[in-house]
Figure (cartoon, rainbow, N blue to C red):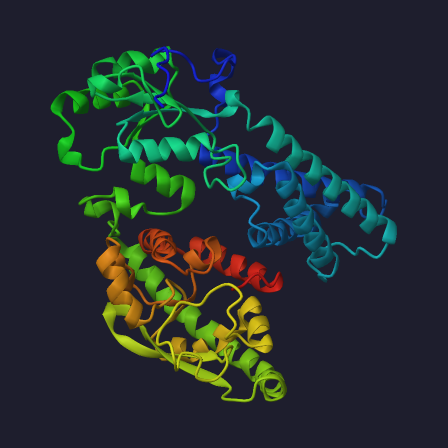
Length: 490
């Protein structure tokens, strides 16, 4: 069955556009809006609660106290927001998920804030705490519900035009057109696809992946104003195939204030992944390109924090070991630790240490195999260790030895590396940094069991390699804490 031809120049939604052009929010603006209003709501709730107590109400003489109290509240809220991933746009665009997550973060914020001495006001009155909690939770819930309903309407979305209706462009269109479904990673990204531009004559007027082909490159500049386009995305994997005429048209678009970007850059911005299948031979989109003093300083600081965190991890390991040993002796007698060879930085192999979570000699008859959901080889104690990520705790020894970092791509077994490197482009690029106890792929994606899973996790790993920073490391660390607390580990 073929798609019906559509009018080549028609908005993809029947919605008044012109009055709202200034309110079509970008991804960074959406996150900034969510963060600013969230913080404003919790601060207002504290202000109103303090106003109920004459001794704590605002007066000029209490300026220094108020600064200390509200700065502390902002810091606690930020940590709780990162733990519950409140600025993940797909989650924020779904009313139920968004409200549930923000209420959890709000409850944790109130509890931690009320339990923090000196840096917070003396919240001794039950009435004051109740006013603070009820006002904050009600305000946060109403605001997040309003955002999910109001700021996901077409008038608030950036209008997107794709150049290239081939395989890459069609895949991007399918992802965007499925944005109304909860599983779609593009949900809530704030993009409204208005169509394609492609020079293939047979595609003119056709529908590709639910979006119309609006014309050729010769009509690109005219379509900017007709369709009120905010961003043009070039979905052409082979950049050498871009003709001089198309390059000139794209330059004119940029000259007129329209953002021009690549599919790879858009995917990184929306999903936090590097689409290795669509990068082609454009090495600058797969490897880090920045080279300044901040890179070296970040590496030095990261190593110092790794050593400090590993020292704390050793103390925690000492507290956990007796209980795990006792549980293993009762439920699954055998070695306490498990040693396995993994591939690290530079492709060098090293021995990784874990608390044993499977029956002894689990691979004696099968050889190296990927773990699966509900793996029968996992012991009852091991299942709990995996869900809380405590089975990874002995790897602080690898961190102290310099073989691993706290944050980085998870090291893979050499038996799988050869297979994955042969089937997935740029797979070995993840070996350019120290592997980690936890990483960006681990907090963003499920446990890998197939080649496709390995490819997607590689895309997250390459994003981390390209954008490694203290802020990203903190985000990963807080998300790991949330996964451990909620026992969502695999």
